[in-house]
Image (cartoon, rainbow, N blue to C red):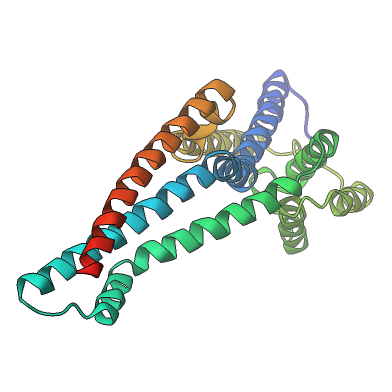
Length: 264
């Protein structure tokens, strides 16, 4: 049955088209933040600041190790006992195990960050990837295509996987397939159906925008401004280096005390 395009229908069609565009944009924005920007920002943070913090953590752990040994040796001496250095070393290692694990994990994360940053697409490739993904989202996202077939649902999962892997060639192949096999009838619905879809899309868009706002309040997005400001970043690096230098000075003092105790 042919649907008469009344002024009311035309207005609903326009609202739906705008909501489809808004939903697609906010969906991609949220997905990009979670799966692209977050790992990239985390990698930049580790590359530009994490290595300084790793050195600080190593110095802090070594200082803790020496202080523990001094305390245990001194306790044995106070008991008029000869310190059992093997036992002391084992206990110190056990107490600091979680810190050694943290050092190893952070070191591994820094190595992984280099790999992430070296494998990024070019600006032009990234732009094209997002353009193709945008079109496919409008045509295949379940929220924009009520009554979608199982095949189309599966195809959209493939689309998301290809996007996550930054596989532009695969996305372009899928777009060609969709162009050949899928015709859009998004606006050929009754007024009630359109109103229901408008209401649901509005809720979905609001929910995604809320998630985006929440993401911006947590790491690594709270670090984005600093990572893009060389002066602020350099200042933070100097702060960590100064703290590391102070720890190193204390480390040398405690090392001298330990050597004196071991010579007694």
